[in-house]
Length: 161
View 1: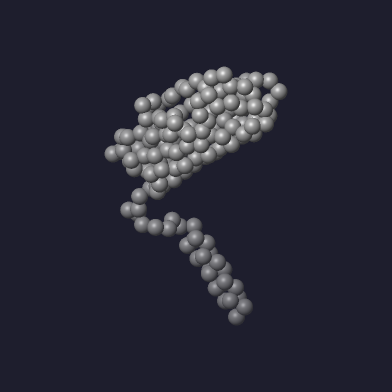
View 2: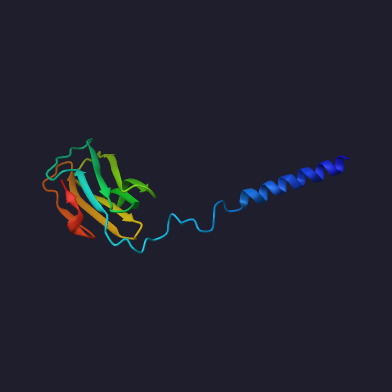
């Protein structure tokens, strides 16, 4: 009797393992990472912070803020602040969506420096059509003299307000 009970328990556990390891869903469901061959419009990146001519002192927070939009769906993106002297990424944030046509982004870094230091900002977003837009800015801290703007892919779609 005990032997039959143990065999039934083992069979139930094995059945549970097999069921939990199988793929859930139907064969005709869309892959959320699939490339949309009909999407040929690039995402639009709007960087609202930092603004041109903004002054940073040691201890100030460098804030990168803005929004990216797409005619269909924004897929993946990242926002990065890099110390140009050391090539160290001092702050980074990743974004991913399978539903949204717009994503607000914000990243802050408290810059504590003893000498003027160059930092770069990278904002990059991709849609489900594998169209990638890139926005970059370079600036100095603790004193900013100018804020040069270098624009990557699809420069006509990037708005620096």
